[in-house]
Structures are given as C-alpha cells and as structure tokens.
Image (tube, rainbow, N blue to C red; front, side):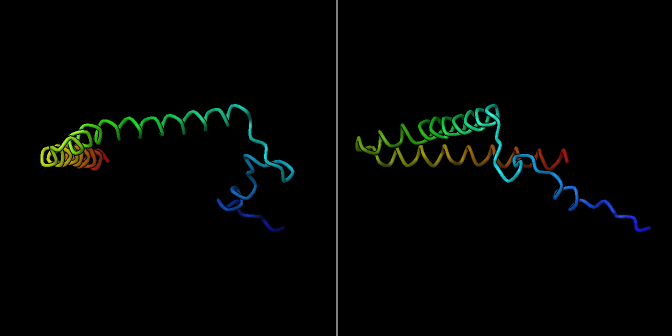
Length: 94
C-alpha cells in the first residue's frame, strides 16, 4: 500500500479559488473590493502628486524657478528621510 505524501504543491493544485468548471466565477463582492482598493490607490497617488508637485509647478511657471526646484528638492528629501527611518524601524522590529 503506497501512501501519498501531502505536499504544498498538491495543496496548491487542488485549490481553485476563482475557477469552477473552467469558468471564472468572481463574486460581486470581490469585484467591488478590487474596484474600491484600485480607486483608493489612484486617489491617493493623485493627491500626493498634487501636494508634492503642485506648488513647485506653479512657482516654476510663475518665473520663480530656483525657489520651485529648491522646494521640490527639500520636499523629496524629507520624504526620503521619513522612508529611511520607517524602514530602519521596521528592520529593528523584525
């Protein structure tokens, strides 16, 4: 009598979360969740882009090019420092 070993690959092959009888069956709730998350991401990216680039672009086209580039460089530097600190704290907690 041979005993079949239950491997992770067999588990993955046996699971078909979104397919039934070779047809896609995504529930309405799943589509709404995917759409909501996508829209939230796009809104977040647009708002962040406006906050980071809005004033420097206005200043640049107003003729205050040196100030615009300085503001943009300082804003991006602050975001970089915050990101580095967050990643460092994440590595310390792991």
